[in-house]
Length: 120
Image (cartoon, rainbow, N blue to C red; front, side, top):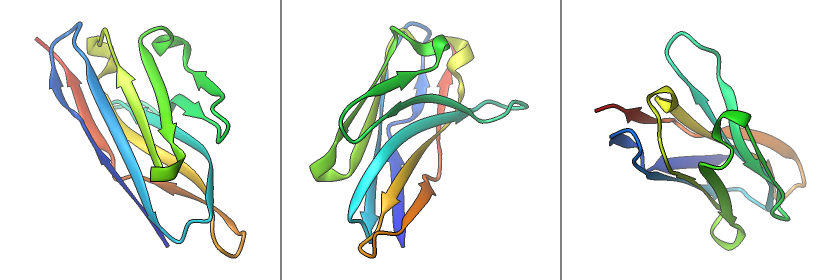
């Protein structure tokens, strides 16, 4: 089994910044894509950004130029630096890892979610 623990959410004013982190532990051989999703009240969960093991990144149009995803493979950790935050960024943010275990079996895991609220 694999556990994902997120941190870094909170309340911030419009224009402010937050940095989210998500660390995985457990039966891990390697981690392929690491991703951040978010879900606002009454809306479907959507992809915010992802990053491949080699560092290739992908962003939702709504966050391009404001958010940066990065990873530390040695620490099994992904980060999401969020700048110039807007009220519409308010949501619960979830990390998502594609994990290969020691038996070379792939599985997808989700973090518990962390609330990000952008409000004055």
